[in-house]
Length: 440
Image (cartoon, rainbow, N blue to C red; front, top):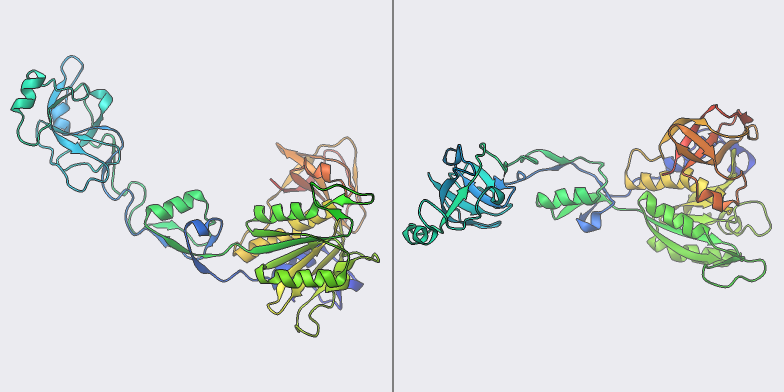
């Protein structure tokens, strides 16, 4: 595993946020491309440019229900002096055969139907009498005298310019154009375009499969009764939702009790469906920090080159972190602290970029901006630590939300940004400019 600076082991020095992040991203490679059907490819990243094989629309067609006409035949038409045209037939969407519109003629046409030869424009049905049969003679006589194939007459009350209400062939995209470029994330509009140009499958990097598990004998699933000393497991829900928001297929595993053998067994069972594993809790220095006990030396004998290294980072919250690989396929594993805010901030800084890297994206980080600190008092921070405080950002100003405690999950629910206090600052005054990580 490569790092940003030489070091002996992660446990005997303080890592910077940037060093740890670089170590994580250096060790992770994008997933191998596969061919998927369109709906299965939603949320995936294209690995090749897609060229348009056939123009859109593939033929001139009507944008209205109305009548296909020649421009000269309706020049000067008005309510008082309508143009009376012979209706030679109907043109429906998807119709194979085509009528020909000659002088003094019109074809009833539906939206999306191909413009028949000879026609130059489409007049909406609202500009006509609806083809009620009133022509140069009375309606019944007009029908009886109409030539073979004719269906009556229509009166047009307004003129139209050439190509009026006609969607031109290739007006959307032309054959040979680039429809989508490599690196595009496929959402509903992109899938619609692929389908419209006839692509049934597409080559993409698949969405990463992320397994999230929390540890702690005190954890109870939401919906169950709490006993003394127990709390609800919120971290696994938060991180699973965050992984899905980042673009992954995420699987949540129920909380694992503080037992190293149980945790190792659970991790081993989950490897079959994981491109990335995330644990939360049990990474500090306490007597029951089961993740460190179970995974610190995992693979040293059975899977050379794998194993999880536990570190202290110069950040608050989120000082204790773990990173490495596990199992015969060397699946990346990030071990996050257990406090709710610590685990979520750690996810945003380290896990989200890892997921986006697996997807094959180049821009893997949340956007950042500079903002004015709107606060009633100065924000303090321990020197030498990069602090991340919850904030609410709007119109160039960011305001703190809640306190600095890493257990304050309610404040996190109302934050849409992280206020960054750098390592060399011990305080930030109201009105100062600060860096902001935008979460929404």
